[in-house]
Image (cartoon, rainbow, N blue to C red; front, side, top):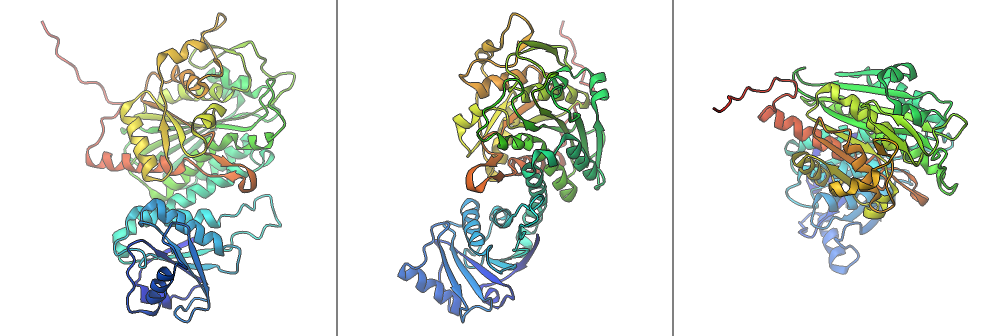
Length: 503
């Protein structure tokens, strides 16, 4: 999808050569002397148009507009959140028609347009017009292929616009892999996608297979993969945007390319949606695709532990004890709690990078869906500064999360007589006890866990990957790059200062 940014007033917008013109109308709209402004004013006066976000008035062959189609869209107070709703509704209304070139006019909304509102419009336009076609040859594909944003001052929002366009590239790669059926998104194919990213500027890729993973001692990861004929893959991506001395942020993605539950098999109903169990991995791929476009002065490592969780004669059984890369033994009481088993070994592997922070992203627990629904991702963290930064990034990116507790008492249910830790506790607080399990493997760095089970995809008639939390992660990483430029954070690799001993 192509995007363009242009300085444009309302008169200029009416002359714009496009297939459809979308005019955002906020609560503060004041009609001018131009024909379109007067028309909007009359529509508001008569009640044919409301400024409530998502309310639309569609026009065809309006004499005041050069474009054959025009959509007046209520945009509320003009905030990013309400602009997103307006653009989603307006683009959704025209995407099934013949319009390919669309202009979105901000000048009818407010005299000053924020960078956040521009980002929201770009992402909303891309989201509303997205069409999955990889395994559906009969699909017509995306009809809206070009979007021009008209704003009062293009220079003032140029950076926000360019960042948003880069985020769209990452988001759409994440959707592509999240939506693919499991037989078109095997661990090997995910590794191939990562290798393709390794050809981009500043990005490197290494892929480890079963032999290398066994040599590393990743017994928990190997246990999950045993029941499948598809070989596991451990993917290491590196974005090198800063000096080697700068400690990286490490992103760890759960890459279960299909999850039957293993021997603790799931119910057949909606099991097809378990192809989305690798959306954490897909989000890491998407972030790296966007980083190659954004080129921030930051070092980032991406780790993806990918395999299938299948039930056959070799599969791990309830009650089996496996040894993780950290040396901790784990009693596998439920083979459907496999995500934490692949993640724990990836977290241990992350130690070698001496990271400034590690964030794992996983469709981990149904309990998180019960707690938060599909509005906010679950956030758990052992580090206050990291948690605050991720919460703020989520709000700024309109990709929100909510912090849940990590009290030590929640780990009581993970105790077992037969290993260092069990992989599940009881039903109560399931998202938290899963996070407590992971916390055991994150003691050597600042760590956060994002449970995206409720936000990574939608079901029903709109079934498909959402690409969350790509927006949140990129907002966090860009903010870290800015902070590093202003006041470089001490590298985790640097030697600690000596402290004089008191007498």
